[in-house]
Length: 166
Image 1 (cartoon, rainbow, N blue to C red):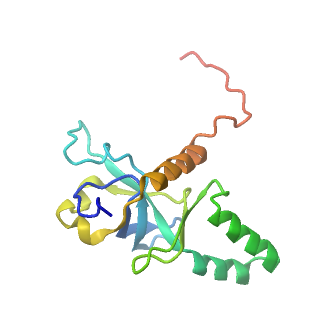
Image 2: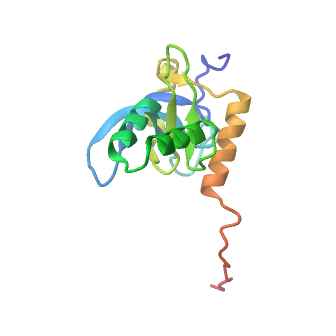
Image 3: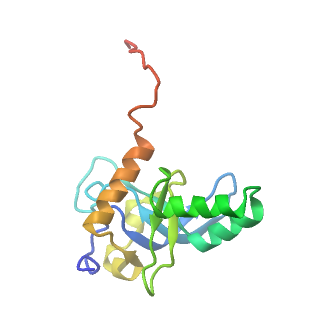
């Protein structure tokens, strides 16, 4: 919580009202999201030759997700309960679990394969304190990095990659 008043946006921060589109639907709406971009890449004091974008993924309420799969899935209630428990144990590589944060966030999940982006300058750093839901602890940030690394860089994808000379 000591980073809450900072005007820096940190990788893993939860922010309110980020614009989200879920293609192929064209509707754009504000939703809470978690920042995937590296902190220094989106630091506004880091001068670049090109404008940077902030990459983030929407945060979904876990209870709503559970109700949705209970009513739309052909799996048994026990299988769905096991799925939810696996999410809470961080066992599903493409889903990041966020525990309840009293008064700020219900139990939630982030699908790491549902990314969005906006221009870096669209988030007002002067007002970021009012938009920030949370900043991850050191433990949370390391776990988040581990989940991002596993999701986006599967080292053992069992594909032999031939070198091509260009």
